[in-house]
Length: 204
Image: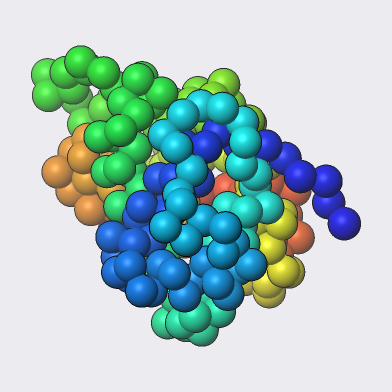
């Protein structure tokens, strides 16, 4: 059994707020019950950086969504939840993302994309206890996470990090006004050493 890895209260709070935004309160309660996270029903973690919640809890909530909808049905819902997590994080924790007061409009589009993804990698590494970095290739950006809540989920035969993929989709939409197709090309949950997300530099 893997030891718990702590994350800030705010990280789990953003996920739970996003689940409720997309699934409604009753849906969120059902996910928490299915995930053995009943202690958070009507009692979400505070919006603080205290390391009092865990990757295991974050992963359990994600798995609860999948169990609720089934693998096929969960994908679209989890992408929507991921998109909501970026908006909640932007509203509640802009300083963590390094986006407080940032003006991007004057920058070229690809520069905006790289900047936002770089800030997200920095925030995960320095604030969320989730080492991450960005690789810039000619065709795409590759966002690499050496640790992920997927490690605390049951093994999957295909990548299942749809919440993270949705988060990157919304981040790119916020930066550029366009919806980019984000693909998880390697997943810890299906045996890879790291989670790897491909964000194309052009709309596909």
